[in-house]
Image (cartoon, rainbow, N blue to C red; front, top):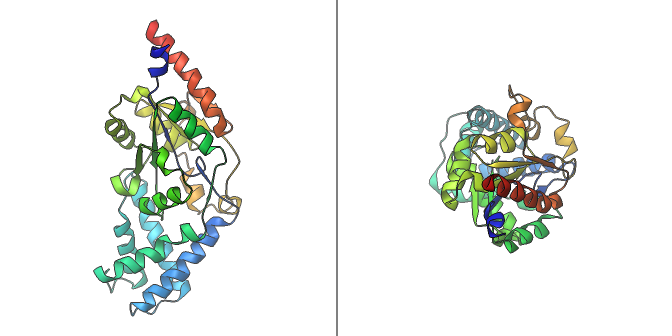
Length: 281
């Protein structure tokens, strides 16, 4: 029995649309708040920037980020702030140290002002995993909100204490599906990749990435908690993040597929039995 229980020693999760859900229009409201904040702060720095110009600078920043993200690399929050100032000033001004705190707050606060909501099953599932003496990790591709802002959000939701490890792409410079970010997780948890199960909603980032790193992968295939307005916009980060590129279905075959997070508990037990049987054989 002990051998069975030790077959899986950690479970890692994706964040967006796995642990955190969105309401219709959240992305649009967050963008509007971010543009309003940026215009106000940049004007305070002496740059004459309208809300529309702040929106244009944000879109140019996103375009710059997408080119980097396409390579499965990431930049720091500070780099994003530099891009905002560069595009807002049309390249005439560079980010000044004394601007950082106010600009960062303007950029990040929309995630707190227009927060996503916690998947209702999260607490029960995380508590169950902890009761099995397994480690819990988070592997998150950040967008415009940095890891620091997402930590605050998880703290506000009262679940951050469940996690043994939080990995955010803007802090490590690697994005899913690059196996490197999953390898980093295994290294920091001092575990073999085969001892870790990763749960996420994205076939490319979560399933393909985890499998290529040697993790077991569980695909959360659910329609719940999605921002339908954002999904209707082909240029939105939500839609672009779901682009499977040239990957074939055989590269995105999960070990298990679940329809809700509550199914994680049963799925882990099944994977443990399979792992235990393979060990005995």
